Length: 69
Image 1: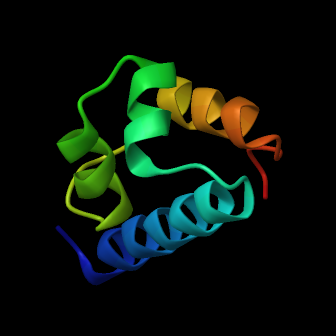
Image 2: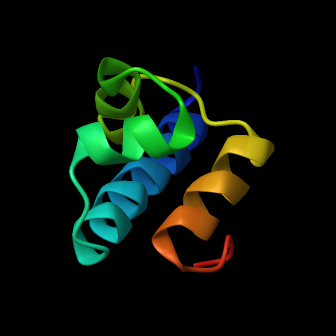
């Protein structure tokens, strides 16, 4: 993975974590709502797992933020 891709993934991961916390949700709660395993949420927020556009849209909706945010 290139440095640019890694930086983007890290930035997205940080934003997702920030949005989840601002929404007052735990990783377990988000996993249940999105029908994922909690470790998957952990991997996404750590920047270790890629997030698809569809998943990003679902996260944004769950956290009540825009995808652009």
